[in-house]
Image (cartoon, rainbow, N blue to C red):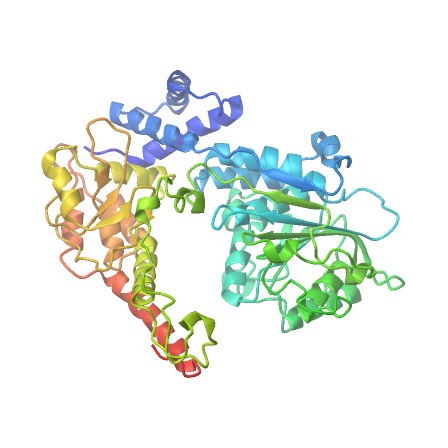
Length: 583
């Protein structure tokens, strides 16, 4: 019989809890892990096979080998009082505790990474750098900072954790600026609902169902006046909600749009501001996601800022204790803002005057420093461009001209790159190769062949879909049919995977789940098949691993074709709108 993946996941979760309770996450060795597994086995009272116990050891080892070292900070005042250090012991960390557990248990973050986020990035840095929500400053105050993080390295989880910590400390109003595109705003709204609020705020379609951290069924103490279905537009300003220290925390997830910013500012003043001062005497944390997009004042006259920039400043000025914190991976425009202004507070520019923090990246993050230097670990996977920038008839390269005037032809390398992007995204959506998920890790192990000469030849002769470092192969330009058997030559393609198990190869085949996903089924369909799999002779199951793969093949991957065709249609729409730019 194979491993019972659900039992392995349950025991791994119990070991995780013991590691956190005993605070031994930075002192794990084989003997400590073995001791914690034995304690968990005793607590559970469920019998486990040797293979299942070995799987738990692998899961724990993989999860805790990912580290994140503390980031760096630049401060305007290195002698500032660290108010959060002084008050931390008296603060009940309700929002943060459930978010921390959610990241580890549901999103499969490394506990070490979450520990660095909570204890260093948030506690030691960001919380001390913003205003004390309980302090009386005697006049309106605005703090401005910038957070710099690598692309796709965890900025969103950082600012949701930041919101959780701030809410625990007493902040009640959070304004999250998400860029200019509605689909990205909806995505951010969903992440905030799952990580902070605990409720899907699209009440008209879901009835306010619990999601994410809210699935613990504990009381909900936060809400949003935006939803996945609606920005702060339309009749949003007709909502009669008062803000207050004794009220639930309120979040606004909005686009950087003139109508939205104007409407929200007016609503806040009309319903909650002191009629004499037109200000709200409450602490507010404004987070500007992608702070280099639309927020910068690009006006040559600093006394007459661009409209979005001016409206963001005006919104921040509504509160007596305001914090503006930008997040970006490309901070150049932000740090080159002219800080030497003589304007009054409501027209202050958004220069990060008070602090700049560089976020740490986890040890499994693959970014430019691990790719572009000649001696870098993944430098060999770069594909060099040799046909771009050629001189055209007018003496210019194509990218020096505006698209509406350019009549040239795109380099072949660019069209190849676009097609590779389509394929890589379609593949990434269907593969289950985030091995932080113990279930996917065990499924991968089950589809890893022994290290033999014949199996190595399967790796060499077939498409290598995923390379070392969990990188989608940029040279993949075709996807084969889902064959009825993956442990064969030829097959559908293989993925680099080092399970760390002695005698196993360093690649794997597509799993039964992935074969079904490629053919248009969903994860839930696979679970239904697994959960209703009849056991018969000596415990063997009716639908074995190989039989499920056989049922999925032999055909062209349905979902891959759907994804490619959809993206081609989107490009066609863009080309139709183009002003004479031809391919």
